[in-house]
Amino acid sequence: MKILQTRDKSFDTYRAFLVTSMIFTHTFNCFVLNDYNRHLTYYVTIGFVFISGFTYSAIYSERIILEPYKYILKLSVRAFKLLLLFLFCNIPLFFAKYQIFSQLTVQSFFSTLFLSNNQTLFAFDALIPISLTIFICGFLNIKEDISADFLLTTVFLFLIYIFESKNILNYYGIKLLLVWLTGCTTGKLVKYLDWEQTRKFLSGRLSLTILGFITFIYFSIFFFYREIPRLLSYHLIPTVIMILFVYIFSYTFRVYENRIINFLNNSLSNHLVFAYLFHIVLNVLLLQIIKGDSIDLINTVLLSLFILLVTVAVCHSITVVTRKSSVAARAYTFVFK
Image (cartoon, rainbow, N blue to C red; front, top):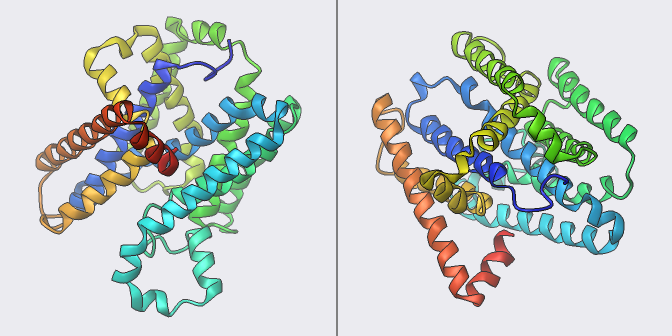
């Protein structure tokens, strides 16, 4: 058995966990700035981008080898749609900041767009590195070569560290692109494993304890030492370990069979892009009513739960509607899939 060639409920558990974490992170970022330790949730951005690259590679790598033109074209169309979706969602921001945009040259506009060297100018910035690297994904998967895949993974990790430590091309967009590529090549490497045997091995008490202990140490360090620079290279490998821990924990204890978890999985894991966009828009709308940095920690937790519940309800409604209406299903797939 190879990973993600069939529906994997434990993987859905991680994706739902990631969306839930993302909602809490962005809500805290908006409303409890003074009491918020951003180190603790830096795994959200990294995990969202990494798992996207991992998923595309794990699902499409073998298909691309068999029918390269068909699937490279399919991935290119997907990437182009995400880019258009990003631009469409930023139209309100364009009008709100028209004076700033009007002063940009063509070169500075595109460097801001693709390098993310000014994160305050655009919203939904994670979509850019994801769309760019989906273009690349097809070409990375044309040939099977485990040595080359391992070398590329090492090179991407090394480049992230060098760019950050030496401040060379140290742009948010460039670093996230490298994170996505790392996820992509990792997805290829995992494909060489017998995944059923691998996860049975990892679900042993010793393996699960080690993964859990590393995850605990990771969060403990960044909880107590906020002065550590917030660099992707410090978070990427621990984030991958945490992803594996959540996945194996779900697999070992069959967490996905719990009714609430199963409902969250079905509602969120199938609508990652929509949930990402929707909850950010909801946060922005709430900021018009509730002043940022004006509510305490407990109320922000409650507000996060409210946004999560609304997002889950909307995603579940989309699932119901698209099942009953083929027109709605095609429209939703055209935009978000």
